[in-house]
Length: 229
Image (cartoon, rainbow, N blue to C red):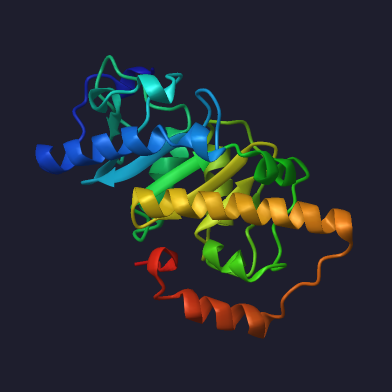
């Protein structure tokens, strides 16, 4: 931890609201391995909290995270002394600053999405569920070392007008209006990646046209978990 991160109490909502978010982060984190989205201590979850956000701690198995172990980080990248947020806290902070619509972020390393990311490939509109990512593709952000400002900038760019992206040679990010929605979106993007990878083994996937994707995006706009709101 650098000196400018130590001992600065981040701002946040009333304790009751913060405690609810902390408990939800713990509960959703416990689902990562079961869902196949991440293994061990990989990946991280966060939720907007007041003017900052709550994020899972660094290097702690999800089953060992207690609500009080979730770290609060303010918009300037400060957190309380004695705690250590995920090493990827920076892109969480920058996404929240750039995207007022994002209330929760899930970053994971599932096998198929990560395999495509290792090939530095976008997911194209080969299935109508591409709409879960908010557009006609799930872009792959450029590669940069984890935890750096360069990676954060690349992720924010890849997420422009999108709700999910891949990260070259790394993993995947999904946004949501809630933690439940962000987790759902991450599962759906991984399913898209799996289907696309399998289709390429069978033949050449036929991509949807712009008009076809637009029609699906319009239908998804107010449909349950798929809605941005």
